Image (cartoon, rainbow over the protein chains, first blue to last red):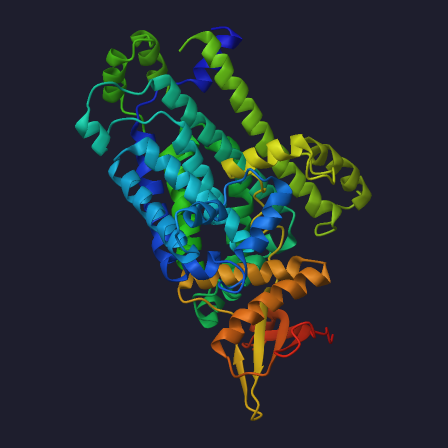
Length: 321
Length: 207
């Protein structure tokens, strides 16, 4: 096989839609969780000057210095005002739409429009939130952005139940999964690299601080104190695990332990530091990218309905996978 | 898929991954040039020079907000969620920031309150905001943000005549201090600002 064929084979492996269905359902859960947990504070976070905790106009003004084209909730408020809606009503409507889009994603009901609405509103809320936002918001945007772009498969969705004909091109499904996989490799490589530069990750001090500093301190300090001897070792494991993820996640012999290690780390972040949303979105991205195996039966079914895909090529590539 | 459409897909992928890489490198160089991390034998000015490459690629070097390249890159990276790097909790975890308002009443009574929201998720975001306030080197920006938080606190304490904001750092004991028997957190006050109802512009840094 020449270099071009090898490149195409790597970037366009035939995939079933299992991973994308997992991503859709998972991101739907994340969107619903985010909307639900912010319900009580939605207006306080995003209302204008004098009504909210800070000021929507201030953060959106800052956003405009980067680009006036980045979505923001102020656009929806402006449109709502044209229809006679108050700011509060427009924001409540945006919240309801976001929740609805999340529910639709879980059910696979109008998956594409739901993904677009969820992506737009989540991005608008994250950007309008300005200094209120943290890493989880970026990862939710990443997951939703891939959902918007990827071809939607039929399995596990209302859309598929209503219309079982047609199937997303397996090579395009595989290509989009590769993007997510490579993106995660870059994420962990740089995350690990910057951690390795900090002395505190090698002697356990950073883990200690993460578990005992507000707002992450969920356990009594006395309980964290009992595991002090283990913290340097856990810190070193994290320093080694994250940068090596980019390389060890590919071979079949190391994929499972690396994936299990990363998932365990995110579970611990969620449970011990209270970063539930961050943990959930990272678990979903990892499981969708590397945890969900492509089913050969589905690929075979897909090949029969995908006119541009050669069955022999799919079978060859799925065998390699 | 035809070979031509595959090439288009690959070109888009290359552009996307390049942007992720450049943003991440930019953040790593930023940490190094700020001296947050020191690599022996390499001066921070070297990182400053190296950082100009990703900075220029992202259009961040230019001051004009009408720089078309900057707008295109910023719009795309924000829309894709890749506008920031991934150095979370790295290289080291700083002490948590804290903001407490001391509400003074006409009868001499004093109450303390933190800026807060109702839900746990909302409260977590307030903590993020307070940490972000700490990261700014620009006094007027810090004062403006604290003043906005003071204004919302005032709504819950309409009878207060003055709010005094204490901004600082909360440090739990280190592992060594814990081993020596220390259990309580330490609050280190960095700034104090007074906000009076009658003259909202009277905040004066006292530290």
